[in-house]
Image (cartoon, rainbow, N blue to C red; front, top):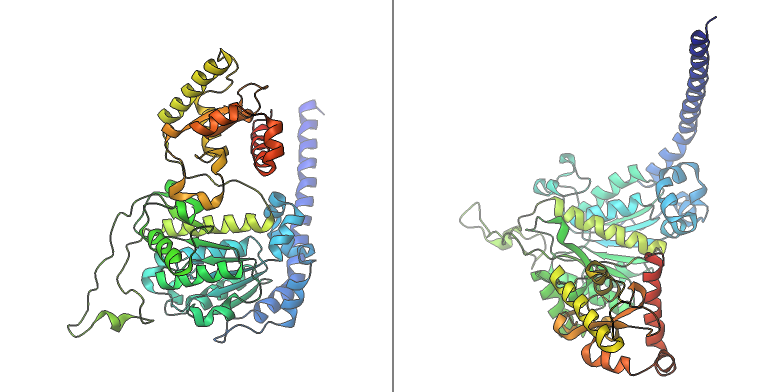
Length: 460
């Protein structure tokens, strides 16, 4: 037999072996699925949608969710395998054992809740008084035409129970207001997502979360916008070009004395359209005839469905990583262009020449200056990093800022530059790190921590 014929026989034999193994693997998977069928069906039935409040959990669900061994379940661990690979088992376990409340289940809230479910959150409370409408199908995460007229909370519970039946899903067809605060926010949720578009209700919820010490993430205006690249997560003080943010900010400060400290998802984009006026189908009709709840708007906000969906995805990603303990820095809202960073770079060179007689130890260019100013110091002085001093008090003008060495014995590199106001820079040049460490230990520790981050990110 020729060599080529032998090669073909060997290849065929190997192929047959692989095929047999593949077939065996598939048959094993199908068999395993069969064995699991009764278990999944039982969970689906125990998590079935009812018209009640959804407060009564089946003992099977409580046992499954309350167990720290849920991720050792074959089906659950396989379903969440990509998350486990990303977070690690211990961090994914934190997500799986978490309790999250989502209030407002429209275009933003439905997508946020959907991805939190798919991320393995073990318990969800879904709250909304409204129903699925035909016009909401352009942005809702799971609703179909068959769901039109169904309460949004029950719609989500029905679909969610088929995606991740092990999750405890409490669906409440209910309006959040001060009278329902204790009922909805009890139980120490790990996170609350505010996806409400009514200002009165939104302000009441955010104030309650701050008062109770609950972690909350709030969605600002997603309607009438089209640019996905302008969506940001930042403190409420930093949100701009958003009428809803402005109103919420004003009301929280005036009525509750809250000036910031609440993370929000918002768009830097100015709204592309305005509220459409109410149009009655009959002469005798008034806007109040169309209100599901007294005081809620009946005018229509034009919505490109992709934007609220992205808002919801951003919220879910932010919350999931927070629950898992994955530390990351959100992109700061700093309105500087490359020319501004070039000015700061040139100012650094001139300062080095003045203080040290040469700029040879400046080891950064304009792009690295942008990283230092924007990512490390978030566009403000290193002495102005307190979250309570953000927003309109942030130093954004390059006319007031400059970069200087933190440790004067080391070169002006990425991990040794701090952003200061001119007066602060002069004071810094006349002191030593030992003096700063002795007199201002917290400031010394904060700067060291920030610069260590640069060292790690640039692998220095």
